[in-house]
Image (cartoon, rainbow, N blue to C red; front, side):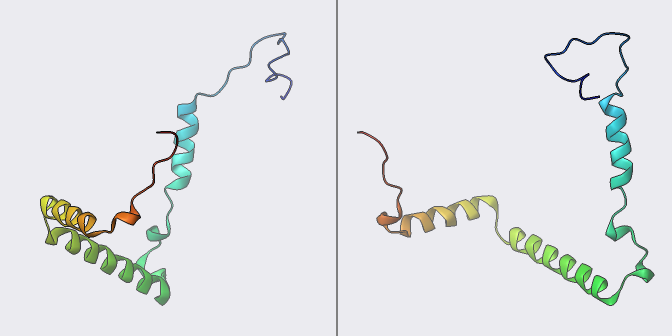
Length: 97
């Protein structure tokens, strides 16, 4: 097999068909479909349940935090923060000139 793929060696005899990449991706997709969240609820341990609850809680907190301000307000606050920052935090110029 390694001889067939060496670039310096010419291949003799009939050509072998190679599987299409699409087929390989389909097979890999089927394997990846099984996740830990697919485990039936009654089979999860207490720790798994608490973990999922905390993840959901943190996700909802992030969403609520982002929804408090509009994009325009966030940009305005960021610009004000940059204006308050001292000048010595600026990146020095590198190179000649």
